[in-house]
Length: 197
Ligand SMILES: [Zn+2]
Image (cartoon, rainbow, N blue to C red; front, side, top):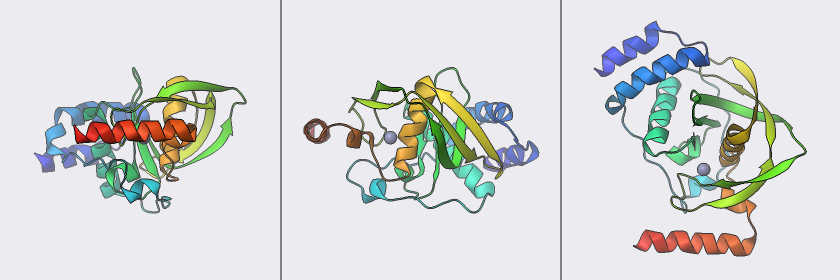
């Protein structure tokens, strides 16, 4: 079945997001043929590493990113970055409600709004912990798709939020780094208590 899926992927070259949606929906049907990736949690050094630029765009990369999408969905997350699944590479996937999944490779922030807003964030690598974080309300990002083609996206709302959160991961920054020290200590303590239960 895995081979069949591979054939499907190859025969339907997916040049854009719409085409991806078809692929992903199809993949979702076959989700158990993709190994679920293990999500790294707080305390693992890789979450603090600066990630390396992706230089090779091949089937292996595509397969891995598809597996990340499945893993993100299974974890009820809306974003997942390379280091969260043990890979120090500059890529992430995200999917916000009522939208297709997005894949960002080597993303660069090229614009942000002056307006900043608070929004409650959580992270698959720090399960059960949430906090308001203040960030720009709007962003413009340039990135590459799995085919190695550049694209630019402007986002606001929850998509702008998740993009900024995931781009932080690529620099070794976590959302709890954006809150005051006292609050951060409290959040980490709560997280550790939950772990012991
Ligand atoms: Zn996160």
